[in-house]
Amino acid sequence: MASNDRVRVRGVEIHRPIIYGNTAVVLTQKEREALPTPDHTHRWTVAVRSAASAPDSDIVGGADDLSYFIKRVTFKLHDTYPNPNRNVDKPPFEVSETGWGEFEITIRITFVQESGEKAITFYHHLKLHPWTATGEPEIPPLEEAAKMGPVHSWQYDEIVFHDPFQSFLNILTAHPPTPLPKAKRRPIPFHTANPGSLEASKGGVPEFTQEMEKDEAERLDTAKQKLAQEHSKLVDTIVKKEKELEALKKELDKALQGT
Ligand code: SLL
Image (cartoon, rainbow, N blue to C red; front, side):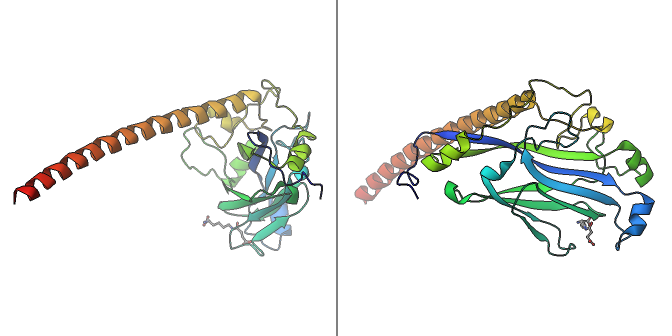
């Protein structure tokens, strides 16, 4: 290990965009009969990928190999699955399965040793059934769902590293992420884990864009501002209450002296 490996670069904040989520398709009758579990209705893939998609790929995201900073992704499936804790130690960081029901998947990302970073956890609701215009759960018959095409549910996020070790920072800067396209390249509309969008029902291979990245940043900013406002309101209340307390104490002292 070089001498500067454990030196933190203070004040530096570096992030990597990722997506996590799933794609699901309805199995054909033939595929179902070929399974040892004919009650399974869907085939799905849950994954952690780079946010940018490779050009002309029918895969959502995944243009970049993330193994330069991700060592392992653990997908914790529903207990109805054999070995529900699935460790994936090399790209693609994904698990494909068949099943019949939706459930919450815990996604734990462990970073490469050099990073010195703690693992982080995301939660993803495995989505099998098509999006509806209202966002209300409404499960169409399988034959209908099959016609609607694959279901996609993906969340964009940014993994932020604060004060990274110099050696880890070197690794990160040597692997710049593929930039997201400025605007929609694909004629087919995108839908994230965002119900209520009519576009959601049109299907197709979605893609993340800079526009969506900006939207996410704005949502975060608004949330931060709201937090700051609430914080300062709380501080005001505390200051007021402390003054009241002070006054009461003085009164009490006076009253006690009088006795
Ligand atoms: C539900 N809470 O009741 C959910 C549970 C479980 C999903 C969904 C098959 C596992 C297997 C499977 O799809 N489990 O038997 O291999 O809807």
